[in-house]
Image 1 (cartoon, one colour):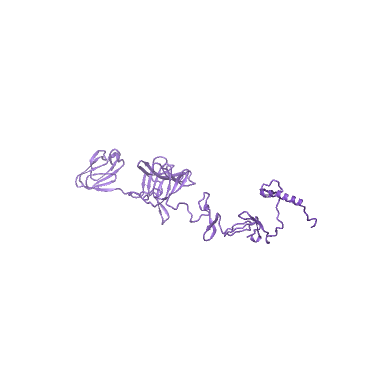
Image 2 (image 1 turned 60 degrees about the vertical axis):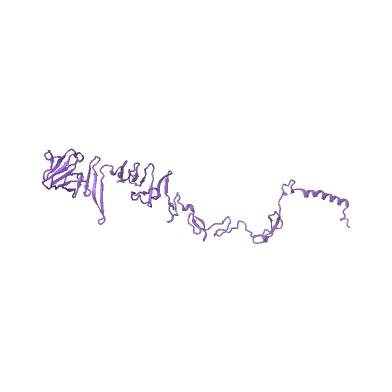
Length: 408
């Protein structure tokens, strides 16, 4: 045996002792450190780790194996043939049935083509066509800034039988709905049209304290703006502008079941109220009646067929006038419905005149057709003497508010 292969018993004993001394350290030490005297992990390397001969070639060549962790914690190598797909830098895989644009790089990122979409549309899923452009919910709703893509099928309202309300200051100003839905239906036997129509389409203007109005813009109306209105007494009317500074009004008036209808024209006192008709064949208007005040006093004039002219009297009629005419054969009390009365009695009768104080200005024309006696309420004849028997012929009487006066 060569001298280089000889180990003395003493040397062998030293090696065995050294190994025996180190075995406990390898068997029971919890952490192992490389280039560190205080490892904090099972394997603590104070430095870098390098694998020699790794393949760093281009993307088209086969790669080296890689280290992987299995689900039981065992570290193994996975060969290049076990790697499903290798993605070049700057790309990521995506599985989708949408058409995409771009390559996925920072200079050409992935995107979705327009797909013939219009402004404010978004992608929506359709079971037949897949992802397609659709109108967004927010853009198909009515927006406070207005809608630019409104269709003829769009509408503002409700699809069920409820009141559709519009509010301001949290107060209902306008309601739409069926008459019955709005609580405006009159189901009684005496209900008038249209209040007795439950299915009428109604636009209901609401108000506060029983008052509401509907006003119209009129830039040339300097003072009085056109408006429909109600008041707290249950009256309704409308006021309109006229010639810039003037106005007219047609309203109901009164309270506590004492109502009236009023027509008003103003404000200088000489504005007329004109009634006219339209002739289609001649494309012209024909005035029928004119009522006009005379300035700011209480005088008024009324004209019939005056052709637009100022009436020359308090009441001017260009045409004939028809008045009541009747015949009596028995005792009668005259009323406001009579004017000319023919007395065709064969026996004595009595004609009673109404109270002169309540009939100021009223005229009766009495004509006897027979010679039979006609007694009558006291009147003053043309000689201003009191008389109670009607003479033969024609007698015309008018009340002065105190007595009946013979005026013929």
